[in-house]
Amino acid sequence: MTNYTKLPAILLLADGTVFHGKAAGKIGTTTGEICFNTGMTGYQEIFTDPSYFGQIMVTTNAHIGNYGISNEETESNKIQIAGLVCKNYNIAYSRKQADESIQDYFQEQNITCISDIDTRQLVRHIRDKGAMNAIISSEILDVEELKARLASVPSMDGLELSSQVSTNETYTFGNEDATYRVAVLDLGVKKNILRNFSERDVYAKVYPAKTSFEEMEADFKPNGYFISNGPGDPSAMPYAIDTVKDILEADKPMFGICLGHQLLALANGIPTKKMFNGHRGLNHPVKNILKDHCEVTSQNHGFGVVQDAVRASEKVEITHINLNDQSIEGIRVKDKKAFSVQYHPESSPGPHDSRYLFDDFVDLMK
Image 1 (cartoon, rainbow, N blue to C red):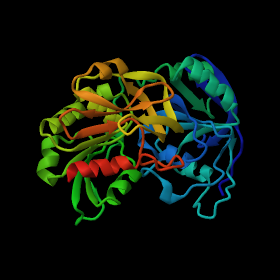
Image 2 (spheres, one colour):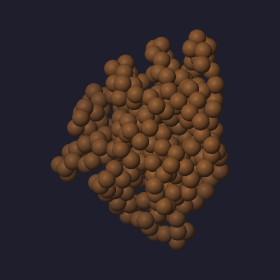
Image 3 (tube, rainbow, N blue to C red):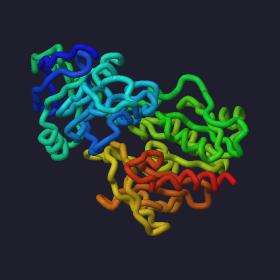
Image 4 (cartoon, helix red, strand yellow):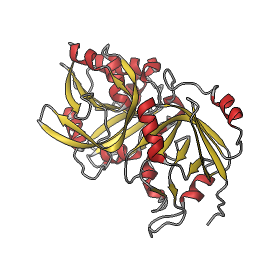
């Protein structure tokens, strides 16, 4: 196990609030938008979810690292968060299936973190003040110098990030002889989404974020198109909005998750907005108003579709709503084979309540 010394570290928020803690991960400095996730488990999936690219993650569970790191449980090929803030940073782990400790994992991938923070106080502060930029440092302990560095960090509002986390080369997933072929526009796709397709007799080909509809259609001739989750501001992605419009124009079956949901809205003239805090956790109740039942969902988004615009739209209809704040969690396009949800049906927040959405997509391709 890597030697680990609890050196002092500082967390500075954009509003000037300072938290003092202990260094974790790599000794260094990192910046990003600070947000929090309320999940009690799944920290490794959070670390490797491309949707969290550019964000400093606060975990609300008291112990992080206690079940170690397993190479089989990553959602991408590297850690995607910009940094981690936690209370108890547990290097010793208890799970036999784990391959290494959290400290080894963060050091190998050069991720700077801070522990021994009163995360309850921090989360209450973020809930009141909203998501904002922050900086963690275990090498610079001068607050004024940290303020100067933090001032140069761009806001997530208007930031295009998906092209930075997308694949550079196309690749395939699943059985080549499967019944269905799906083109995946990779804006930050999670591995478990691809697994869910493969389990449903789908052969997927994953394309870089800026691939056009014409290129995918000519290359793969898919039965349907999937628009993935991903980071950043959807309104700053005209290339992806145009691709979605082209898929709709061709009347091809289409399914979108999270960022894909927001892009489907934008392609139908419905604006998006940056949320005050966003939804990040494993226990968000969502009502399927078509089937009149509730799902326990996993969520991760800092942007959402404008509710009034969805309700006024003549092009789409609402399929799902969030029972906590009545935000729009699902839509489908009238007279098209296209639908989307804001949450993550491939995740396992305990139950598998939302996996039927993959089946619904397959049904559209039949």
